[in-house]
Image (cartoon, rainbow, N blue to C red):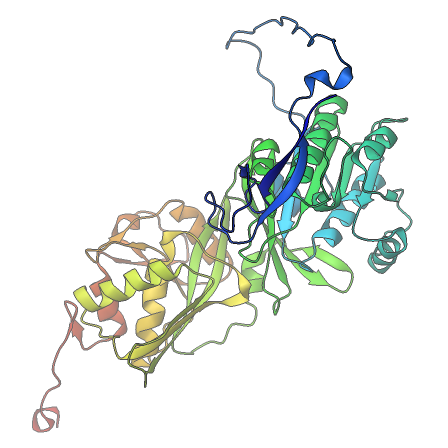
Length: 473
């Protein structure tokens, strides 16, 4: 028999140690190392004296050959297909993560029902809920009439044996991978070893049978998918379902995708009947916009191939603290610090005695540097209590020298702004030749030029002294 040993495995990153210790040297987490039993050798598990199996040679292929696009299965949900790269690829494995209660199970039961309604076999395996609980959700969503096959099971061997009977399913949803366990590993469900082994068996089944498998993953307090990092390398795509608790919008992003781009997003709206697709996110994000308020500006952004218009809101208020507060929601705090430094160094806008609050309306998170110009305009507008034109959009990257640099996809941004009724756009100087019918451009070469337009008393980035009262009269 194979000799049994005890390994100590970090439950956060999967690092293995020969003895227990308080801190993991690999990820730096404390009290995450637990004892797990493993078999050191599997060679002798079939019996004493049996030699290991010899490998079989296989044919090697050249680089040149016929190239064909991977076949796709439309899930029936346009926003999900956009993020997945055009649909589900047979034999692919997707890992979907998100905060508890964000709507992962709701989205996946809707996708499974849509595929079942199109004549494909869809199977939904839950390890966290009972069959009755899933039926209640399906009844609330109005999906009970669709032929989705449902089961509450956690044994991976039993799941694979059941799925292998009869017609191979087109889609298999496993909710969630942290609840699965296999007899091959002597560990409790949810441990790093069990998650890794269970995922490997399900991936092997997907590649062999040609089924598309979607694994639901828990997330840590930092927003990372729980369990060993190697699972994210094993699957074909890693999707993140995110959103703010106080907003009814949900964003689906791809952190990894072997069959498509990773910069696309899908926008959903949480309603009483489930998650509804948002075909025009720009109009939704701007629907409750307050016109004529200082510190608000519309940013023309891009998420993948989709132009997206969102509202930036800034509040600059005098501080009573020794260190002014900087609070950001929906944008990178490091970029805010850079924009504040450029405003003070090159534009003469002193914000050292003010608290600064910046928010992206609607719960969306902006990640591209093209939002620098819009954020700077919102900050200066709030400081001067001067509202910006309601029919204007802004985009452009600000460098440390104060120059406004051009960004990609300017025509698509301007086209989206014109479609939504905006009449003017403040853009980098290099975007001067991208005019749209009915949309006037106001190019700026430096951030100081933008500040001078917002504050008429600014010239070359420095506020001009006001004339004496006698001269003004």
